[in-house]
Amino acid sequence: MPDIRHRVGIAVPRDRVYEEIASTDGLAEFWAEKVEGDPRLGGRLSFFFGGPSPAVVMEVVESKPGDRIVWRCVEGPAEWLNTTVTYDLKEGEGETVLLFTHAGWRDPVKFMHHCSTKWATFLIGLRSGLEGGPFAAHPNETSISSSWR
Image (tube, rainbow, N blue to C red; front, top):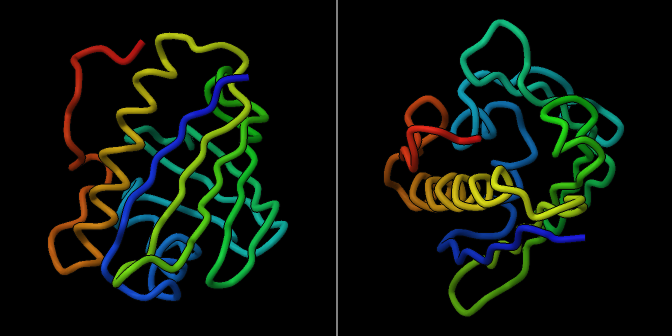
């Protein structure tokens, strides 16, 4: 199965990066401005991308403070169902290294290519915000195409 993988160095402590991706307020800063739910282990997170209903619902299947968060997609685009999103945090030289994986895609479809680029823009926005610049959550993220399917 194909996976999306990204590596981003962020010049803040690991605990600060973890706090951002392990809280609804943090997720609303860098991914979707509207996030609801429980970010703790076993909880579910609903992400809204402009509509009245969540576009994606993730179940938190692993959470190790300062080290790792894993979600499983339980609602959303058909291509995302049962995929996992993993944020692994490692110590780097003067930075926290975020190893991001969106795993379990059945096929490398056109939508996967789109999502790979979008994830990269959101992760760069995460780095920017944590390092003192602007975050770029939806709907203020970088546009990459007029059509995503």
